[in-house]
Length: 286
Length: 261
Image (cartoon, rainbow over all chains, first blue to last red; front, side, top):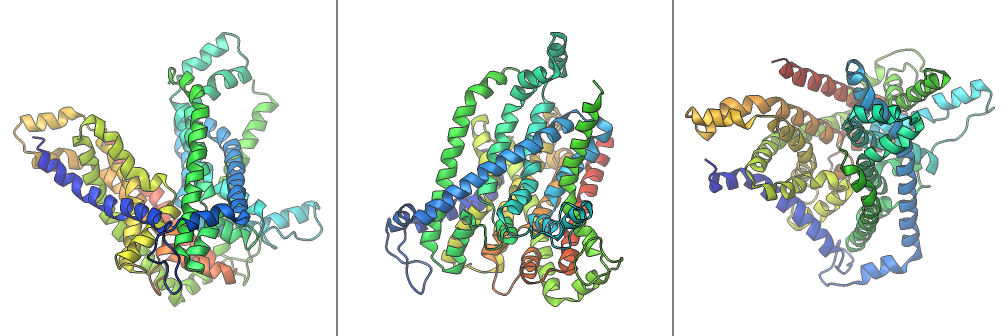
């Protein structure tokens, strides 16, 4: 029944598509980063290491890279802090209400990032709800200019990434045996002890998955910093796209993109190695 | 236990869910504004911004391109994802995980990197700035969503069902058509819907690969927002919110309906 030919034919279209339009393009990007720049064309024929020399040698690019990574860490931390209570609630909510709260978390995911950013633009605009609220409370006496700075970019990105963090943590929490909570309580643990010694350790695999996902997404974010940061927030992705589309320096843009990817992969590997002993301890229980 | 702390926690949760929904609600409210500028609370109710949206040629052309991209992606990706999921099940155990990771790669890697690679590659093979190139990019990125959905429904099928079908004399094609296909159809449908919505909202890929003179709706809204800040953009954005709501309801209904049997 399982003839190898039939199996190969079923797999061929997907493998071909991914090889040609996914694997080869990434290879092309690596190759591009070693190309020489040219004038009048996106890239030249010669090969060179100069693009990486330019990335490492210029303090400006290193500064943008480190600022992007720091911003990514901040956004990931804030997202985790907001997502954990939602995930705990989502994992424990009764079946009847489950659909509603699940829809609350998932529906922002289904609406494009651009729309959600636009929502924040309206919220913080001069005549927007936030300024109106602060004015009516008497906290301020004239509308504040809240758009086009780092803070609103961080708020909007945290908003975009909360569902990505909530879902893996909620899944990890849902897999926990409820009996463990009862056991902890009946052994005399207070609720905060149960949280720190049962709930939190058992959710660590989900936390790690969410943290990695959100960190990767936040350092590669493009629309939000452009739209809400105006000219004030420079991040790696904006700089890369300026090189590619603005000045047509494809080899240098590719070198920037690969430097960013390598740095973020190194951080993720380090994070996973640090978290491994912690997650291994809890693996026996889930 | 149910002291003031309980109510405080409830208030905190309400604030968190409010934070999630606030921008969506605000966009939708703004699009029905009767005034000439975006302000809160909106001045009266009207549909005039929708009328202006549908009378605007560049928005309308962008909407058409986005719909076409999303529709073709949804159809192409349902076929590809179904084949990929069937292939996954026929693979020997040790090859399954590597194959799954390969198909999910476009979801795991940042869209901006995939788009940059495709920008270079498509230029090299002569498809730079073409509608076909953009379509291919949308298919690559939406494939993992459909694959996850089809695979989930395929893995719920009892292997005994297919064995029974085979032992009753049905060939592989008959078994697929009469046993597997009816059972995974909701999964394929859900996957196609996700692919549609992800393609319809895709920004970075479209930004880098956009064909000459062709704007997708998110790109058109983006361009518009850079210069104008009025409820017309909100009307365009609310269409996207509306699509998302329709998808939520459809998924809930189909998967729910199937579960009843």
